[in-house]
Length: 408
Image 1 (cartoon, rainbow, N blue to C red):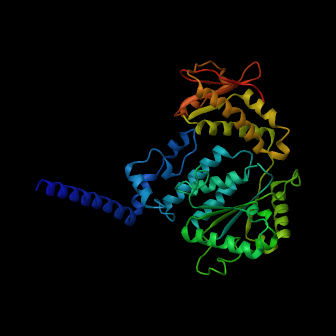
Image 2: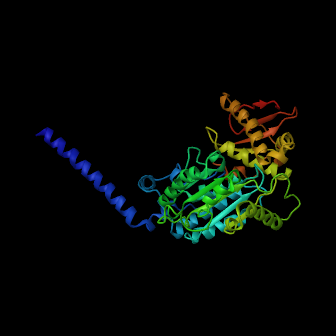
Image 3: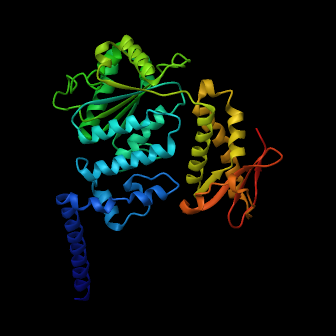
């Protein structure tokens, strides 16, 4: 009898647990509008954070209810709801304000995304054109991350509703093979995310015009591929990146002139019909002033991605030192050169600090430190500076060492 009682207890516990889960799932599926408040992030709190926000289902401070809803649903906030539009748009604004520098087209891009979120079933194709390293792919990824409610890759650089394709991946293919390779993938993605799907097509200029014509429905000419008439592509937000306007051909032109020049090049190569539904945004080459801003952005992101997250600031003299090391590469590499050199120097410095047994805090001049760090930093505060001997050094609050890296 005792064994029978134990079995009954286990069975009753199992059914009770199952019933509770069933009720929660039922509520989640039948009243999604009641769940939006679980994910509402106060703007002030989000803005106060010095590190980029993760998608809501990747956040570390989720409640048990939020974890459950993220586990049972691909879109805990209904993509067609006003709450979702507010969620995506507010995050995109914060992402852009924190990470994009020197590109005056960014507010116009945000406005286009806002329109798309409000008019899901109207086709929209955004074309980011410019040199390598000016932020085209970065902005596309930020849009993706803002729209997604989960991470789309291990690094969480894109959202889960985004498909990334590259023109260089189809080199050597015939047009027929290209169609067989790309059309099913796009159709599957459109079917899987009918209300908030994103397609990023990088390096479109690597495709021959005949292959681009295969993509005409994706570029706004039609709403579906002939092979799949029941799957509409119109809800997809499509983002193209190209190198139109590189090699200085747009220098000295206004943004209006640059946009017209790039649009004409696009139409000349791919036909006027292909370009008629595409909204072009020219990206400017990186200036020395913008290079310094990029250094600060990268420094902050390095601190956020450290094994033990830090609020990392950098002195003006250290910024100038890093820009000086890369200014000869700016005409060809733009922001990519600045970001690479900053990571090269600071990641080595950070590794030395993490390997040390102790830290000590030095005093910096007030204008050398980030004055807002104390108010906005939820982690340990550290500052990169340039010593008198021309080496970078990092000092952190609390116990610590002062490691240095010699100039490379």
